[in-house]
Length: 219
Ligand SMILES: CC(C)(COP(=O)(O)OP(=O)(O)OC[C@H]1O[C@@H](n2cnc3c(N)ncnc32)[C@H](O)[C@@H]1OP(=O)(O)O)[C@@H](O)C(=O)NCCC(=O)NCCS
Image (cartoon, rainbow, N blue to C red):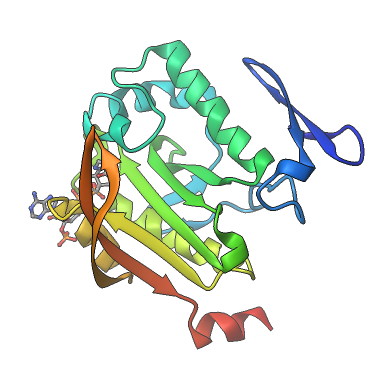
């Protein structure tokens, strides 16, 4: 757990060692470190919790999908040590204010089935971006849309946020369906948006914006 060490720094203990996080260089220094919500965001059959060491086999399964390592920091065909280092990096995102990275887990068993994240690097502009992946053995039953719905409901508890974005490659029908099911609207094609797998690619932009319903839920 992060621990305050002084006015401008916190000490983060990771299984791989200790990291000093400098508040002054942090993305969002007004409320660091970010903390996991006290009750896990949930929707349908899933809830969102912190990653744990017993999620390693699921992460190793996830790392067999060649697309997943291209869009995040989980190495292809990760071994146990690489999966544990990935877990540490997810915890570190809270400490630095970079965002939330949740393990998507089944509510009834708490078994990890995937990852859902909210990047807060643009929070000062009122924006976040979301991402998700489901381990191959758990695909095909709409887990990602449930996780994205839980993530989005949680995101609206961050009062600075006005807009959540998803960037999806046009061929990725499962992800486009996930976005639509979770209530994200397509906004169009953003040309040559980013490099994935060594190629600069166009991305479909989907968004959710804070609605009057969410505004009234805050008061
Ligand atoms: C995207 C992803 C998270 C979806 O996982 P999931 O929740 O198991 O998704 P499902 O397999 O249940 O598919 C969701 C929907 O897409 C449809 N679908 C999936 N693959 C499809 C295909 N090839 N063609 C047409 N429809 C497809 C499903 O039928 C389902 O439709 P429904 O909403 O009408 O039921 C998963 O495929 C994944 O982890 N992919 C790799 C990582 C990734 O691409 N992340 C998103 C980056 S933007």
